[in-house]
Length: 245
Image 1 (tube, rainbow, N blue to C red):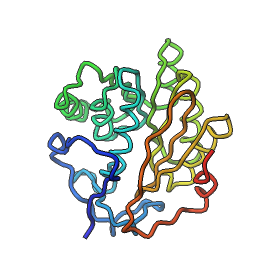
Image 2: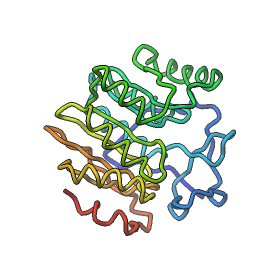
Image 3: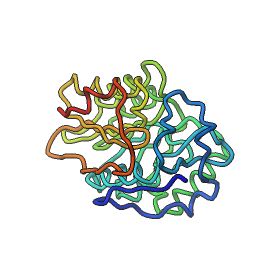
Image 4: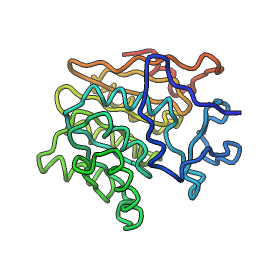
């Protein structure tokens, strides 16, 4: 039976009550080719969309802890799905969070999303952007916005993650961090690798779907201890990134 795991040095708020449709998914039925079914951690999905998962509890703790390093600063999220990750970012204390998610153009989706954000007391800090990256990121950046923290979990195909990463990096503060989810995909890993090529420091978090961080300036990502009960391995396309900066 799958279980939740959180690194012993990390913690996260209990936000599950704001997501009544979030349930444990059936990993045997997951169709995404890079899904790591062998990792025995609970995979959370929305019961209405059982093929699309949320970040798990361990990954949410990594996201929350890193975002807390930038409390009082502005953040950007590319790809938010139902708002689970967004609520963790807002609970971490970001001053503002631009949430770039095309599904927010749907009135019912937006209403449910807004209710979750209101539930964590962050309606005044969440800025909904119902469009696509990178166009919306460029529009916001060229209008003068600058961010200190970014979470990229949007389009995972082809060059999209790389383009999202390089576009976002143009509009970040001198001290900044970009966190990625789903480095199990070589396309997402290419985004982290592109930032490394530009001089950003990088690391890889060994989680169910693999997270990665790129940072610059006077900051460092939080430490994480992988679940010792799992038989961890890394795909070949991540091995070089896992060696550190």
